[in-house]
Amino acid sequence: MNDLQPAGPTDSPAVPRRDPVDEVVARLESPAAEGERWLAGYAKHKVRMDQLYRVALPLIPPRVRVLDLGCGLGLLGLLLEARGQGNETHGIEWDLAKARFAGRMAEGNASIRVVCGDLFTEPWPACSVVAVLDVLHYLPAERQRALLLRIGAHLPESGRLLVRVMDARARGVATLTRLCEQLAVTLGWNRAPRVHWRPLTEVRRDIRAAGFEILPTPGETERCFGNHLLVGEKPKTVPDAILGSALG
Image (cartoon, rainbow, N blue to C red; front, top):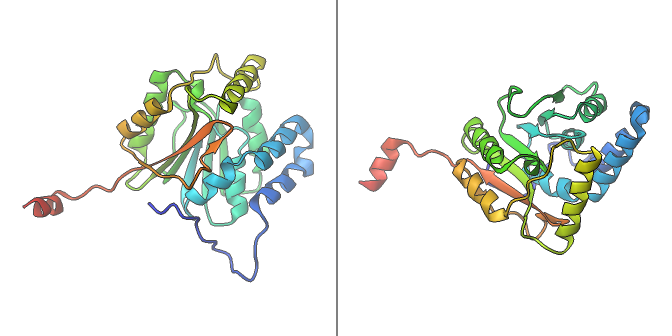
């Protein structure tokens, strides 16, 4: 699973699917979303404007199970379902209102499950990809490391980790992004006591310490509003017999 090229569609070329973003926006405009217009409106804006999803989707192979930690409104799972390549998504979100909204949007879809709970205490299903998108900064540094270590222990060989973080040392538009995030926490939109920005070099070091190789991401598309998408992959273990033969 170390090919970062976009995954090929499983549908017949003669019956092209709609753009997953368009499909998700249509779902967010359905009567099912009427009870939470503010959440639905925010979700539509985010899925349209945030390039994260268009970058992340090709990095998730078809037919694998995805664990989405801090899944928010469940947009990643909805987009993977709309992509139509046989993925299953298990989302965990600690904000009850967001978890309920994500669950309603996924109703009737057996490939998406959303639970409300703590990332450290909620059981994790077996999976091949773990997404931690815009989540680490809600945790102190030591808890960030603990989470990454647990992910490293949970994923199998060739398992993939997608992490989007903000570099604490970044300037320019990143400064505005950090201010907006701090305001969202202060107003209670994002539930956390405070935010914990860290230098990107430290986060990379912790990802490697958790047992991942950091893969290159395509072009400059890993950056959005000062955020960085990091892709880690668990290396395959070389059997002792083969290693001994190679060294001998």
